[in-house]
Image 1 (cartoon, rainbow, N blue to C red):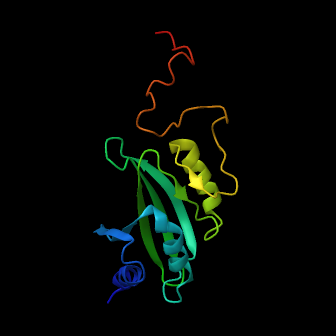
Image 2 (cartoon, one colour):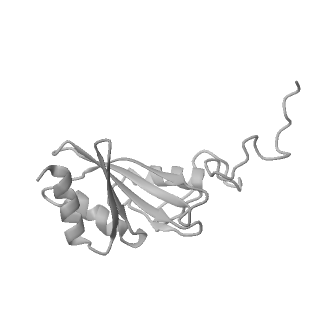
Image 3 (cartoon, rainbow, N blue to C red):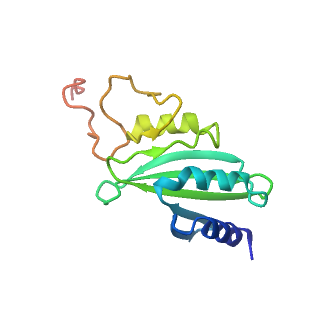
Length: 161
């Protein structure tokens, strides 16, 4: 059994009702899990003696626009001792929130703030969920598919031709 199979097997065994799908694509393993269990799954992946996913490399959002579950929150994690990268994907409805994993990986604090700012995805129990790039009073989220390509109408004059 290779390491990818071991990871998937252990997660499915520990969280049988949480795993929605497993995808292998171009050498990368993605485990899709339910939103309600993300903190427990993340903590297990980090603290399990064999797996040791001790580094959250990145956390971001994806706006699928027309899907029932409009957003996905994607976690890229890495096990330094095992030299193995794993993706965790969590589907979310347009108005759904997700729990923070900042108690599991401290770096999630900034990644979640950036995802909130750019996509409007809210993280429950986050220690400091506020915007990073856009002003607090800015009511839009620039990486959403419905954000106007030419900018917010009436906000800036268009350049003269």
